[in-house]
Image (cartoon, one colour):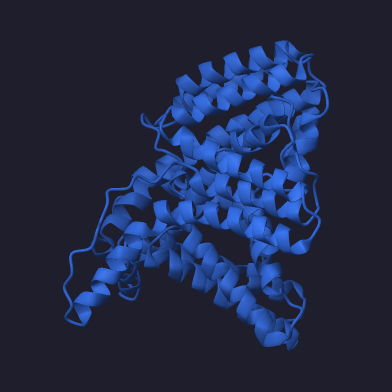
Length: 469
């Protein structure tokens, strides 16, 4: 089920009305939300609901097991088995085909041709996101950051709540579970906040991201050899804006719909393209994943505690594995390695005082960071390494033909980038303005915003990019 569809609008209206009518019945409200979340997820393929249920029950049973033991040895065994089981399922669905095809290529290279057991495996939507949430629950209980939840409904709902289920943000149990314990209330602030974010997110996705994909990005990355270096550069700028509007648009809608249901999710994007360093970029881009990788991978690897070179190693490994998490392809691995290598280089330059603060150097830092991110996006977007290499080769041709480019397309690239430098509390200011208006005016503005989006949007709506991860 896609957010920007009539089906979801009807679904959410029913869930919204039903759950708020049950606000005085906490347990029943949880069950309705849980059932709605499984309907939402099963809309693609009901069989994958069993996978979601299995991951959730694994996390719940692990939490119960951890609550029964105080000795570290037994607790380590429980967390190792449960996390390994979750990762094995994730690895099977995401990496089985990649591993066998890579193995077959390696055997062929040394003259050993073998028939390997290839299977046609469909990647379940959102498997990475709900697996990471299940892992974070188990690890947080193990670390005693949160208490074990004995009610399985709490854990199942935490992992499956539909706004964030298939593409995040990755919600922490410590932030979400306490919200289940209190009686929900719907304030005017939450209504305004939710509606404003939903309109912003729908505009980002349905207008900006969809137009850029169809009119610029998809044709260029289908065959980079057919385009000039100017168009190739505009193509990657367009993709930088497209993926930002696509993914942050989804996050906006997820956070907004959660707010309308009475839940508070943290911000997942914070104007990432205004960053003047790659470290700053990752503090602003997909914040929930960045925090997850930091707390459950970088810090357990040792973080920055054990010397300079191990810090560089840990930065590189964290981003390398983050690239592998995004997909089973060499393009994603290279994307992660580029980010990891540049983060390590930045740390080295900062440590040697090669980079010092000044306004001019901040501007230079912004330009360099943006283009490093864009260069990495080439690998992220390319369907294979040959396409990425064709893009870089074509960029070196220094040709300037811009046939087919329109002012509308240029505006769709430029305006979201300019918006990165608006005051960081622009959304909050907008919410405060609407809070002062009657509910009838708020509803009219929301309907007007939806009508404008439907009028501006292209006829078809593509799935969100991050559904594939």
